Picture (cartoon, rainbow, N blue to C red):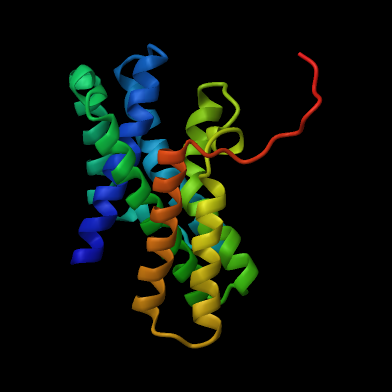
Length: 203
């Protein structure tokens, strides 16, 4: 029950980030809802497609759709107030990333994926929705150009895979992986860390 509640919180936060981006791009209410659903559920759908789970889990559980779509509508109508909660949203986004990556990696391992494949699938679960959001808005995905986001996700996924490989307790491993992701994300935001880019480019 606790895990389900935490997953729904993660979905709501990711949906809010997608809806806020859609509002800033001046999309209509349908566009805002679509961006909210895509951001919140996109990573999980990609995970399930890669693992051969059909139909995807998020499309079989109505609460996931309800929370994502409802959050999108709330942001559409109350976006000035949501914008004031930026720090809280960033904190919850870090928590959501940790939960999605560790659950995605654990699911992949449980379904027989190799450790390295599970790491990539887990990372994709966490960042996939945001990447799809940016592509729909005709932008280079944020995770590829700013902040320590995908790197944090991959680090947590590796922790989960290594813990599974050496036979540690699954709950402890998932908690550790999520904590690593959340810590890296929050420190990166606090210190304004970005991954290095190529130097000497003109323009």
